[in-house]
Length: 629
Ligand code: SF4
Image (cartoon, rainbow, N blue to C red; front, side, top):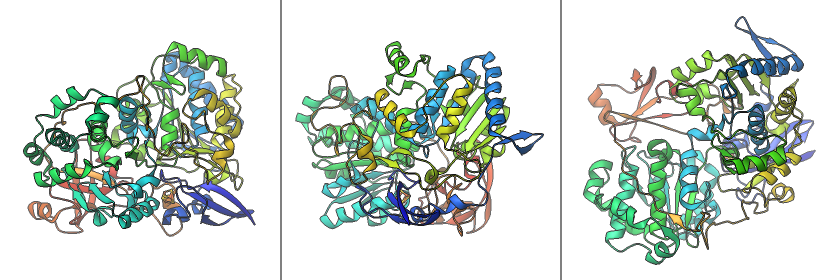
């Protein structure tokens, strides 16, 4: 039996797996040599190969004719799509857009944005836009690289680990091993999250701010640290800029004010501030921060690491990214940045030398702007992306998708987005192709091919190559050669070799194999980090809905829902007993949930996990985004 190495297709930990192949995959085991997962897998990772054999894979190209998807040949599909795009281009090259998913490999994302730019548009993006693009933006502008500064491996070496808007036990289960080890060694674990979750249950401190009030909390902590001389003055003087403006900005954020806004007792805020004033603190965060407080929330959080000198030698910033290659997709595919850096003439000329065509230099539209704002886009090609279910404001997204002149979906399954597409192109799943992925702490690893795709399904890189040929471009689609080309283009990946990313025991972290970045200097032009002060955003009245992850499910549940025995997922809406009493709602009763953008019925679950004023649902239910705005 052949053993083929690969990387779990789900969360951003990117655990190493071994596939046992005897013409088909018979079982999957954890890879003991993998430098981060160290022989561990969570439940859904263990079963991740099962959906490969699902009976309802898309196995040949489909075209929608009179409302029905009809089988066509690859030749007809590629010719039709290319001709249709050529027709639509008369409305301007920016009427076309390509948006990719974060399960696709670096090479596939690289080829997708290259094809869009060959056609003449920068309308490219990935689903990283709605999860950690705020993290990437804040990190890039404040410390220089839009990625975690420290590896999760360092957690047990810290005095304090602060986890904001994330439950490791549910969302990134394999990293729990590091929290357990840390706890045994005496590291203090702080969880900042409005709900009680698996991680908060074993944390030393649990702060429960009202959703969306993180900035007030962080600013008040910053102000307290400054007023009580608990800051690292030497670090601030030698390694940062913008401290005076920051200090002035946070000066009005008193503990009393923060208590009023966040609902956290001022004594608890004070104790938290004292805890993080030590050396050896990791500031980690997940979607709970980015989706509640956006890029300003992340900026205010990073400010605390700068104030206390906990980035570089002593601590760091760790982003709990949600998908296997969300870091890589976000690095390579952006509508306003080239894969080789800023979108300007100089970088366009450098790309011309490698690509043999010059990309346009006007910024394109992000996927959120394309689907949720007025624009002139008439054709969208989605690769491994199911926005009809994953984007907020579902009704608006559906209206836009249905209004397009051309909607193409490249996917292994008939997703909800594929169901309304004009063309569906059958894609290979992760075990049926090869390529690299970048995980949540900058670790890049190669996935090896274990089996052939079913029917006429093809790897996305083959499909992109055929589309490019339709436009007269010859793209090399061999993943290893694409990786080498990407290295020439992207300085981020240029110091990694294929050999090391194929070795699961190697520290193949970009840019230069650092477990911890910025020990000497930051990656900004002057080598210094930037403080950025931001005011607390307006906090809306009424009940606030938050969405979270279930440990057994993954994103829109297209893949995990096909693990035998898992079945369709539906979530109740969790509310506190105080709210239930006030609203006269009984447990298990069906209620109408009305939000600023939609309405849907859900069953109620009364739970002490959520505080008064907060409602919670799991994100995997396809109905959730009818009411998430
Ligand atoms: Fe897969 Fe994440 Fe589970 Fe690891 S922790 S096995 S990457 S889902």
